[in-house]
Length: 183
Length: 299
Image (cartoon, rainbow over all chains, first blue to last red):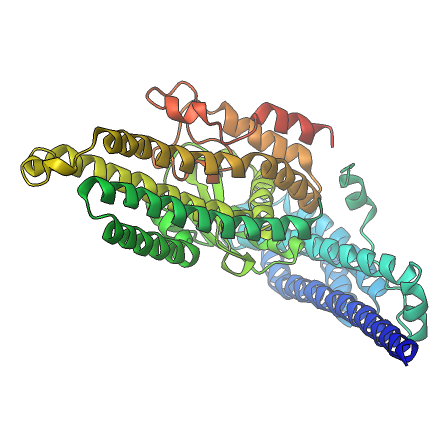
């Protein structure tokens, strides 16, 4: 009789433990999705600023067609990117194209003095920072989740219910160099 | 210590501080009541005042502090770097966007307030905004937001309102005794016991002292922790070190800071060479800034 009660008790505790573990995975996974949509918001903001920028620069530097094309193309591929890798890739491409656009702008003093241009440049730089920060937040969430679902005994439950390892959002080579925090 | 144990220890501390505050202040009123021969009603007054102050300081301490330092809301156009730094660090920490305020003071300094991340406020001086570049500003904002995330600000802001209240009350009582002392002599001279009077004096000294000790007990280690968190958020500890160096190197203290709010700031708002604040130098609320800079540099 009393052994039966103990067994039932153990079983209940075990089930509760497993439910808690499962819910923990779900919470972490939802956080990753949230963080990912945070990145998307910033990428979208970035994309939205670009047509305006191209128009402004065109007003001063009509002949730099190739630069405009590159920027527009990179923007289009970022808008259509589906997977995480594609997004990261397109975002890096856009950064490169914008860099050459701003390099071109250096040669046009009138353009550089244009307040509209200055404001756009400021906002683009800011959005770039925001992309970087939201990616960092995303990656730290992925790290926590991946660590958790790979450790025993969590890994067994994670495997049973199909929790898969999440992908990191890759940074550009240049940005990787900036990270020099050691603990 | 993990972040979660830091949070729960801060919440416990806040509760403990409220309890201590209510007991201390009520006891203080009780002693005054003994002096006037009406102990129980004074005790009730003490209980009432201290509970009200506790409730008010929990819900409104952020607004009280912002008001007391004369802070104004930041404007996205005028304070673009500050505003976007606030947005960015909130993104990096996964916190809601804090409310941002600017103090019109040319001494560089910053503090945060708010009882939880949803009510977070980050406040900087105009001097800080003119002296710092973007990365340094981000470091400072990250330090402040880390305080909010760890619930340091709950404890610290509540304490600053409570300390302010204690010093107000002791001030008020000292004054009323000073002026009212002669008048009462004839009425109840028999009740006057020199021993009670000594008790009263001790209470008058001990109350503000204890309050300041609370202030001291709270501040130092969490500054190191917030520095480390900030470095993790921005990934640029050197810039925060540079920012701290600039703040420490500025020769003039802040105009609007008081004993009650000093511990809120990223760096002690009173400078060593400022005369008349011997009390502050007795109780240093901040770890030496040189040490913090050095730790950040080796990260």
